Length: 215
Length: 287
Image (tube, rainbow over the protein chains, first blue to last red):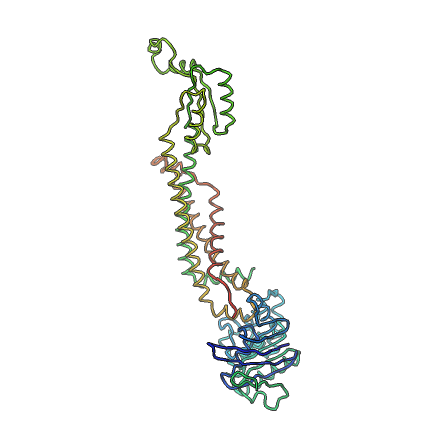
């Protein structure tokens, strides 16, 4: 599903990722860990088409990302979705409209959108907040809205960058359980975190990054 | 499409003061452009009307044989330069002259001093070549002399060329100004929505999905500016064609307003708005 082969990435000639190679299978839940500045976010951005590698090859599903054209990136992002630490939600819109946004982007009919959004809200336990304005929600609720938005189009891969970074332990646990449930349904999930508590004693694969190298 | 139109209208409404200012500025530019167009249009009508009066008079030689004159007449008809050709024999001309001056004066001369003539009425499209046409006619062996209103035609030609050049310059300048106003306005709207656009990019929106509402916004601005101009043109039309104005300045009240303007201008505004918006957005980058 995701294959990195000898990937290098530099920012201002400083190496951020060095000779990174790994393969993540379809339906796997993988943690990418490491201290701040280890290259976790860059690695996720490379999978998402937000950056291109300076050297090496990246293959995600059917997309060859080493020299992907701008025009193809939107289509990559329809099968690979991203959950950000800072949520990246439209604060002025309702929960419903935020979750409906990816469906509107792909041209889904309005009559189908309503049911799909309500189903996604039910999955994340926020059905009662459908008409609330996003900025009135707590951090944990906003993160669940972001997850609902990420799963609404039934993507093949979900990437999450420090999804519990701004949440208390209890809410973090809820969010992690949500990712595990999504993974059980067959979706490949890649979570970048510097918090070892999230994967301690878990059966999931952990890729450790240190100074841009996999250890 | 419906989503994009709604999004564009919402975008314009949120920035309503920018929108109003842009529409007013575009309207003023279009008003000037339309004014110049009307001036040119009316000048063309004026020239066309004059061309039916402006003619070439060909004086034939005394000894010109009748058969050759008729074949010469045929040649002139087939040249396509004239809307009407009339042969006037010297006897007919003398008869006409006797109506104008005292016949006893003509009797004093004792002979008919006039020549056989051909009066040619130049077609509008040939008017600018009247000099060459006259020169060509003069080369015929049958022709004694050719008269045409040289000065009048040359002045008219100069006025026409000057006005056309002026019109093209003003049109280009103000069309460019409209483009710039729409470009700057849409670019401003785009920057205000940077965060929203970044989110759309993350969610897999294609460049056309992102561009569409802005292109519609630009189109609406251009269209509204043109409609604003049309509104004032209609008011101007009724003022100029009102009875009071016609009594006061009859020449002004004869100004023609071509109906085509009323649908060509909105279409032009729409097109210009969309093109300017497209240019304002540039390339949508994802990396």
